[in-house]
View 1 (cartoon, rainbow, N blue to C red):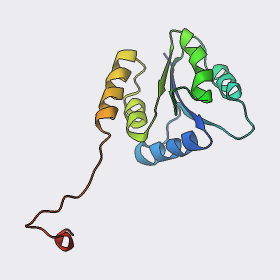
View 2: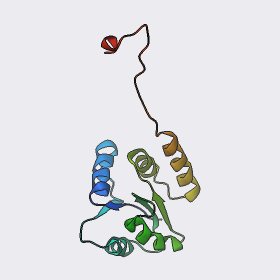
View 3: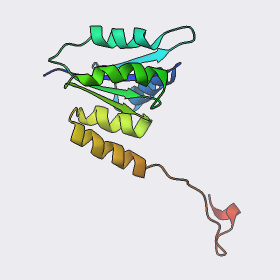
View 4: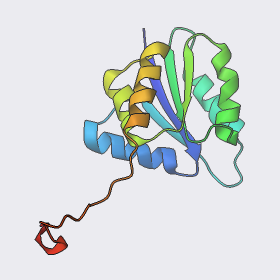
Length: 136
């Protein structure tokens, strides 16, 4: 079965994310990115996705914002059994899904959970023994 992965967003976020992914994991022939540009309509993106797939293609769509116009338009595609829509895309989430080439909803839910756990506030903590100048 053929697998396709789509990144959809407002403006060029999806295109930039695709470039970052391919910088890290190499070119992906089954990865396509679409950005909704000013003056465009989200349904145009969804039509392009529909034209590039058939009922035998397993599809994962990663979108930027739940409730945003692009994801709202893509939501109608989830009535098909072969299409999964995930929102809140980021680099670790997209990389894990693309590297594993998974289209199974349960596996994607596990990847989403791991991606959430990877979101942290990081900071350098100064200790009495180590001054900031000695860090590097």
